[in-house]
Length: 314
Image 1 (cartoon, rainbow, N blue to C red):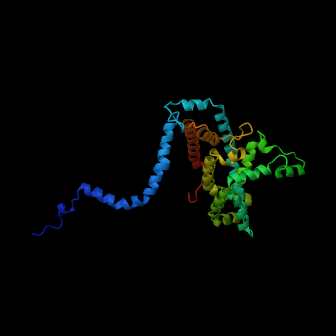
Image 2: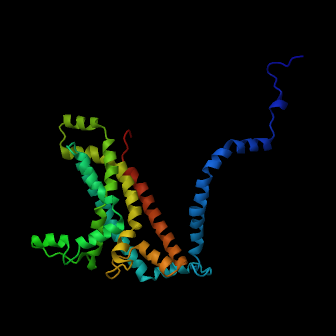
Image 3: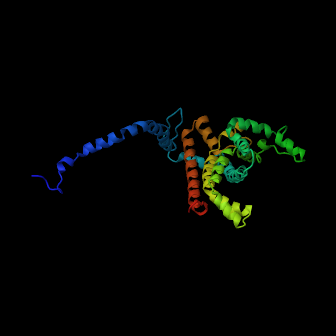
């Protein structure tokens, strides 16, 4: 007797749950196998050190001794550390001035380099070249340029009757000097701004020109609003980079932060505590404070971006 069409043989379709699990593992085993080097690297070089540093921040651990659990003692000592607050001030000073200036100069230079002029590829290359210079070589170069006695910058100022300051030897001018050096190497951001300018359709400019809009109106009503996603990206990356400033001031001062600790930045002081004084617990506490600060500022930028970042098609 043949079974009716609506009848099914459930005994043939039933699959044990353990076989389903084996089948799922077999399905993804090759993917997991190929991804295993990345997964192992993520665990060994990122996840384990990350969670270990949380524990070490509550201990007196050093490289030479295992240390003991001290609770919030490291964080309490940081609040009483005058050099810690000096490094915080220097870092915030640098970030508050450098990040806006890098955006202003980056956008302005990108707009200039986006003009249809013969040989523009050469000009773009010239502006990008400083980013290829290592920070140590850049520090040596600017130490010569800003030398108060025979530097090129003070020499040019003397030619127009202005007495140049001591620059890196002055507590007042040392951080502005560092900001100037950092602005010299914003070619990477300029390339990103150029890519953003290239994504803006020409139809908007044609329509604005037909309506009689001048250059100023086209810039502030078309270019800048449609460039805000790129500005937003560079703003976030600029904040993160500014609070992690290390190589350039360290090379300029040989790690001393002179004069009068005016160039002692947060990450420099963190490095000194960890690898000079072997206070790894103290340095781990500093690292997590920095993490919280950067995350808070990044979250603030993301929250406020809904008001000023405009995406095409929205």
